[in-house]
Image (cartoon, rainbow, N blue to C red; front, side, top):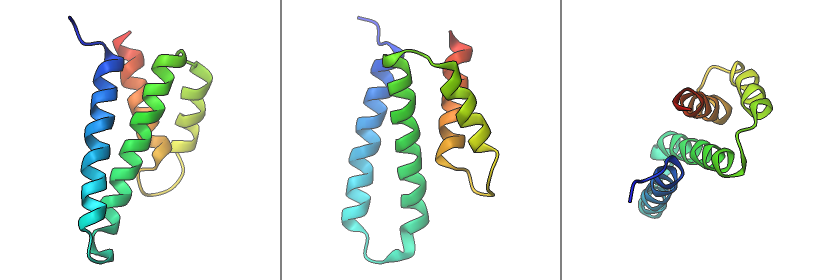
Length: 92
């Protein structure tokens, strides 16, 4: 059976979630905070993209995320999610 985009995102979410839980459990101090923040943002973006796929592609959400992504110097959750949604839209 062929894997769908939804299945692939779900598998990626599960794997990253497992890895992030392990990293948090092993963390000794705040030295790895930035890496964990990035990991949480990536996981959040994947969850937004997964929900977007299963509940229906909402162009308004993609546009709002693009606008929110334009603010700040670090790559935000909104920017990560906007990038994922853009790649999913281009695959359609």
